[in-house]
Length: 312
Image 1 (cartoon, rainbow, N blue to C red):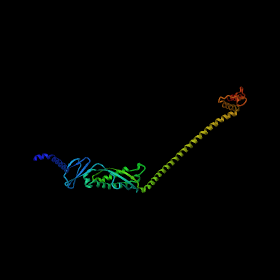
Image 2: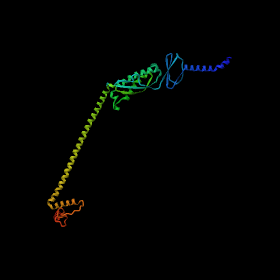
Image 3: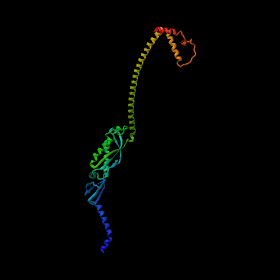
Image 4: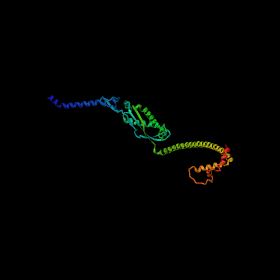
């Protein structure tokens, strides 16, 4: 009879055993995946567990498990993400920064900060201090400027990161990177900053204008000097040509004075050359100068021939 009851209720009993085993496993073990680390406290004494997989434990209150995600997190700060800070030359600016961090030593993290809420509260305070201290070492023109080569933002980010790495080492936190996501000017001093920037631009423009004026004056002076040299050279050449022309003309004048008939003949010949150069047909009186040269046996040629013979 008892055996019959056993076989009758064995499915229920088997299910109870399975449930009991599952409960025992749940109570006496825990699971870590690839992105997690854990701290196991035994009567309050913590120990780190970083290997993924199934781990055995004593149930509460003997042991307690605290799991932490050790993947990289982005944190932009808590209250007042964008805060006012002062530059080295006394200018107020609005700055917001962010950090990428991860838990690198889970036991140290647990001993000093216990949980993520306290961790980010501490990080917010450290970020504010590092930000104010670092920006306070740079001038306004090195933070906000129309010339990118004068800005030192990358250097500022590196220095903030170095300061945070030093401050967070004792908490088991690794600072992966630091970035600046906001830089602005408080509204109350925007006009003042713009006026200063306009004044700076005006000074630059005035400098360029002065340099351009000096350069233009140098170019004009150089051109005037070259012009004077060229004019003097041209005048000297002109005087030389005139002197040669005058000398040649004097020679011709001397010949013409000795032979006036030759001079008259040449003038008539030039006149005929000018009149006939277009191959024009004319009906003219050969008794009128200079067409009398065309008259056969012209008397004008007699004195010319005599002058030519005398010249020979």
